[in-house]
Image (cartoon, rainbow, N blue to C red; front, side):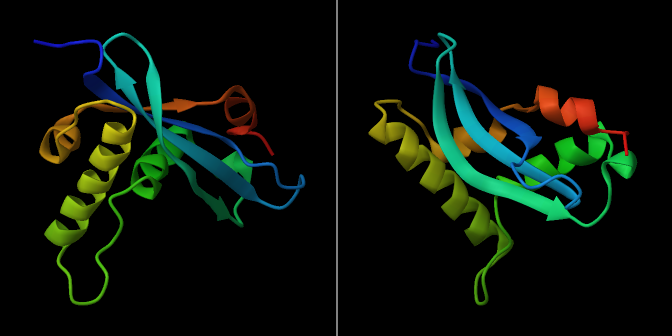
Length: 129
């Protein structure tokens, strides 16, 4: 049974970071859990990336792929396996959700669909110089 405090998908919103124009591509990413009742719980808002390349050569597919990477799981630190890093990442997100009163299992979170939405400003710049 899916109750209102059940996570049904993950959502990352990518948009233009607030850097001065002409400084290359800079994107910020906000990662949230979407609950069955439509509410969202913030998981990560400190992620993003920059590139010296230009917006003209940046595609929506590139942004979507990179957004999924930057919100994790991260690469393993020395002495740990990829499985360790993944388990730690999903356990961390599950703890955030529990602090918000949402029952979440790390293994279940790892299997959820993960959508990436491009913000208006980012969509306006992609493919343009």
